[in-house]
Amino acid sequence: MSRPVIILGIESSCDETAAAVSMGDKILANVVASQKVHESYGGIVPELASRAHQQNIIPVVDQALKKANVSKNDLSAIAFTSGPGLLGALLVGTSFAKSLALGLDIPLIEVNHMQAHVLAHFAKGEGLKDASPTFPFVCLTVSGGHTQLIVVRNHLQMELIGQTLDDAAGEAFDKIAKVMGLTYPGGPLVDRLASSGNIHAFKFPHPQVPGYDFSFSGLKTAVINFINNQLQKNPEFIKQNLNDLAASVQHTIVEILMMRVRQVVRDTGIRSVAVAGGVAANSGLRAALARETEWNVFVPPFEFCTDNAAMIAVCGYYKYLAGDFTDQLASPEARFSGL
Image (tube, rainbow, N blue to C red; front, side, top):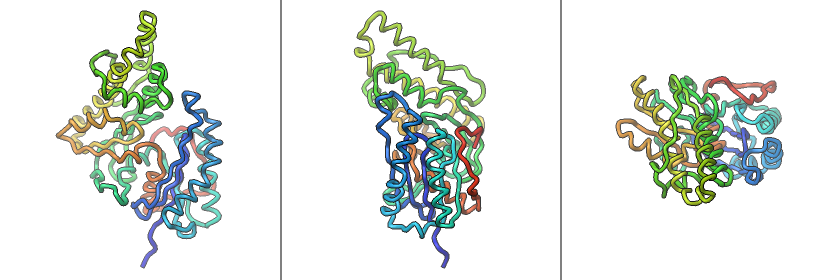
């Protein structure tokens, strides 16, 4: 009887230190340590993120192994995020993974963070509904650092067909939220406020971008200029219109995203549509996808939307099956040109 494939996944691309253990595609443990230190700065401070990863990495891995009831000697391989992300943060996870794999004499698997977000849909486990997309499917991967449209042929064959030319959708949410006086991260707060606001209260422009690409820089600037102009007329404008502002901004961003997805579905004929990344947790985006009744829509559980290591472990599992390993010369990359 062959040994089960047990993968330790490590994620450290930004401000979440995470470790997960999978047996096959089943998640046995998924532990995430968030970094609160950035809240007072209104955004991620890379040096502080790196220091926090160094403090958190050993306790998080130890907790994941204990929660999974797995010894380090049971591991088949270690998968780690090699990019894209903050270079200093990536170095912490990469160095730890390489050291542990060397000590245990087991294979090392480097994982593209964005590819892992897509494969979060294939994570199985207790209490998780098994509703993975069928191939091929279109995946909208949208987060604080990335906005991409991907055609997924199989677990490891993905075609990037569109991406943001400037700001990501999540970045636009956070920067607009900051001007509205909201704390970081602002995206979830905008979502919460939008639930009791009027989506048609204020109209904001849609960018004119060719193909399947996105642009949110112009929208961000237009909203910020609009708010500043209104504040000159009425210093209480934000306070008096907070919910409507949030609802209008969220509606505009979601519509920009949905227009591109609809375009891809029309052009490719692929009606299986998935969403991944931190902004996949946004209720406005989820509701918009649910209204597309002619599509088969797949939305991951909330815990697998934001950065986590379960998606790294699952991606690592499929790369393990394909024999796609790396070596001790592996180094992280802050930016990847594709998938």
